[in-house]
Length: 155
Length: 142
Image (cartoon, rainbow over all chains, first blue to last red; front, side):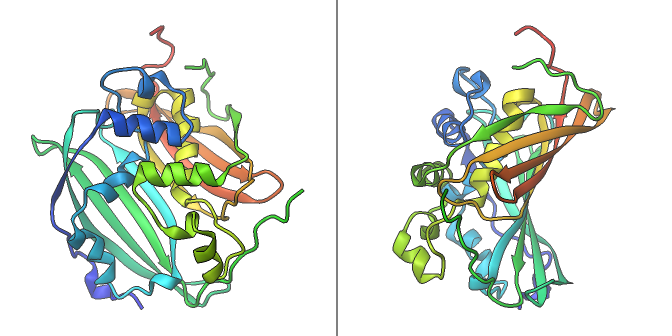
């Protein structure tokens, strides 16, 4: 079971620099043809681009979930949200990021017993200290391992 | 950018993605830095009880975001939220659709809220989403 005392726990602050080549790679991987990503010199990031903090966060940040006593075999990604104050960050911007455990709560599941919801929020500020973006992730720890669903059998 | 009539109740033109391939999954994993082997390593996926590899949830979230930004403009997005429902498998064709639910002004700019769905053709809903866009830049010739 997730450790509810973890609410309010913060990871270390880390920096990331938004790069044009990564924006282009991400836009193409998500099948965008928008000139605003592919052709301009200072493109904004696509809405879900900040998921690529994977490349930047220090190991202690990745360990944040480990410290919450969550059973990773029963973990599902339930929800993801991005909020931008004005236009999203652009290529060349340096961002300062920090993740906090925002909320942990239980719900009765239809099939899997009690489900525990763990909400983490990462705040991104610019060099002036202004909040420019937030990413909020909701992970669900199911009461028991979800049964493996079957893929389509083909046409 | 497409010219779209944006009033409450307006359906945005739908868009189809796929059929998705394993290469699409790997390409997204490379772009995002999430290398969970369950999305590209057949043997690993089977050992975890799945018949085959399945897509990264954030890939279909990214495709749904692309659906919005390619219609409404990359600079206009103010909020993008998704809930994950069904898994997405190799060969799946995904249909993105959206409907304007609110037109208003906030932070001194005109905005719209949009409800979004991404459906597996011949299957169920893969994800639902909610987006807020500034429409300030729309309608200008640039």
